[in-house]
Image 1 (cartoon, one colour):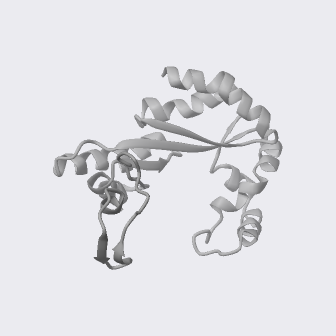
Image 2 (cartoon, rainbow, N blue to C red):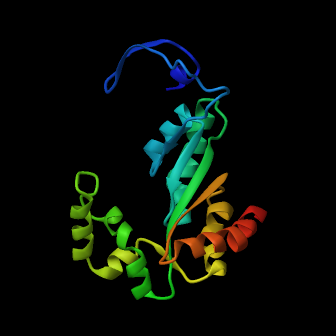
Length: 193
């Protein structure tokens, strides 16, 4: 990808991909950073060696720091590269109680279902998720009730994970109101950090 983005006409025979004189005829105007997803030490080390940034989903900030950030920093140092930038995200539900959270999670329930990587039909994932104990599904998300709790839920991505970019993956029953609150009350406070 780097070679294509840099304007090269590329013939490449790899294990997974092959190209024959591939070229981007409308290349980007400037440099485009490549970011890789990482959830553990092997993928974090690879990302630090090959990419400019890492995308990681955080449930436990201390675990993410130990399993993703530290291995990435070590791998970058070993090969003489700068530390990769970090994009950290966290999945959350804006709700006043578990019943509201369960209702708000309707469209997302299948995202954490067993077999999600092999499934083809999203409805199958939803059915699998609905067969799980409700508390097990909800336990995979941070449930927050207001702007203060949202800030406290995402603060560790800045303070402990040291993310350069923080993304909020949030669902609620009233998405428009949630977006307004995030823009008015949450994002200014997170940016100040």
